[in-house]
Image 1: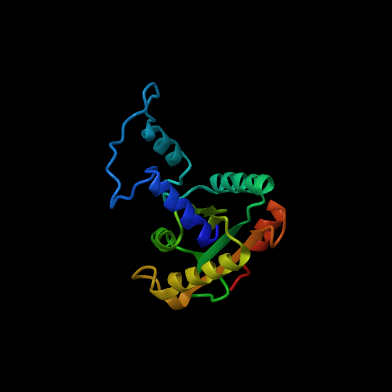
Image 2: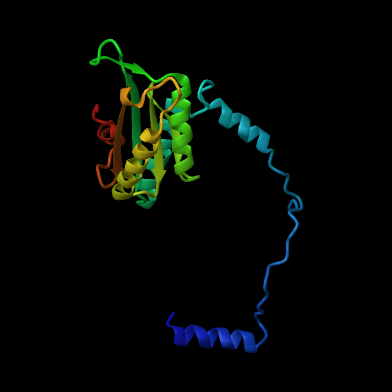
Length: 198
């Protein structure tokens, strides 16, 4: 509403004693609603744990695909954009520079920790296939996803992942794709987000 309208509405509400202004809202005790049993959140946590890989405590690849499918269904119903970022980090072999080795478990956990610090609570981090990581970004267009991927890359390579890893041997590849900007099919989205080897 234009200011001339809402000021008049607010003035009328105050004049008729229908609204009041207070400094702080009073604390309301959290009580169970009568007749509704409380939710056992421990069961929810246990179910969530069943979808995590025990070695990294990240969502498994099938769990990530499940959440991705649900996000695609949301797009089909509400036309809300979403994006994914796929991260592949490997180490250049010291004996043969054309060969790469997977990151040690401690380094994978460190990459996940750095991503977790930057992502939103609504974003979902999980494994992509065996050695990759994938991030699901609801309500995120391609431009925002690419910008976020660039920030992620800077943070991941900013300091060594562990004391026994030389950053010069780290090969980091990051790819992004968005629906509907990049494509409108999950298979195509996963193929487009697959990063080009650095």
